[in-house]
Length: 365
Image (cartoon, rainbow, N blue to C red; front, side, top):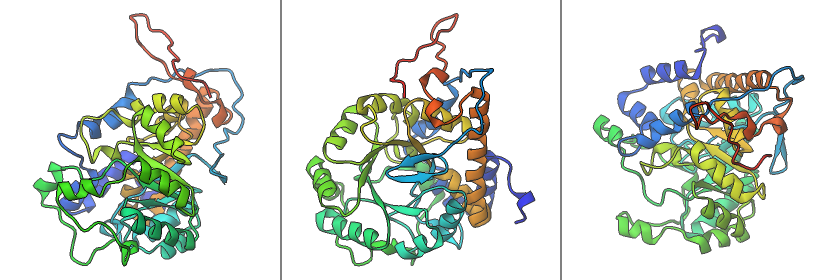
């Protein structure tokens, strides 16, 4: 696809991806759990947060750079772990890694990737974090060591999905993984063999397991899938090097608050003790700014990167990320922010009374 033919917005990428994918695959990618209330809320909640920009300031070049777990990054937009990318494009995770790295975006490789750890990392140097699902202590540590040996710099343990959510959209579309598609990096790694709810929950991790992993793993461990501030604080006490506020994109448990709604209380509880990331519903640069204003150090995008991959491979992933970063710089310029350090809760307008009032209830950065 020539660059001039690329979709101009993430919404256009979504429409193009849905048109290109088989109905079942589109339902898997874009669907959510239950009645999809949380799925819709993740996006709608951003619209309920009007911005309150400052004017007549000199924002300079609108510097979006930051340091995250010791690595200097060009901007605070990461690519979240997305499973089974070979369903979307023949380049799969290699294309995503290349596109992300081209735009200076860190990528988290999914535990259910269809590309090996080494191949994905070779395709893009910023594909250097790896997602884990709990496989028991032996299997999880073995996989963590594989990631470290392959040159990855951090692990992201997903803690909010001990069992899969029920996703009616997928069920109605008859989605099923094709034969031969497998999480290649889990090959030979021991893990739970049970398939019933009771067996899966018996094998699910607890707080002692998180503490053990943080102490035993060869890399820093971030806990992904936290929405309660007390859980966030407990995860940090257990040794987590970072927290990802996330409701799994609305794919596991329906009826949760939007990630952006859960973010401020988590950020306040941690008081910048560790980096706080969030994902879920990021669709414009204004959404990135809102998340940073309410306490996130960085954000992750999942479905938008997958739409870009579907439509145009590595170039589509890179373009989606470039759109978001450009939009972030524009909104920073229009809000009077010279750098990410200038983004705080005072940029959010809370219309709580008939005349409106400012309510910055969260700790300033």
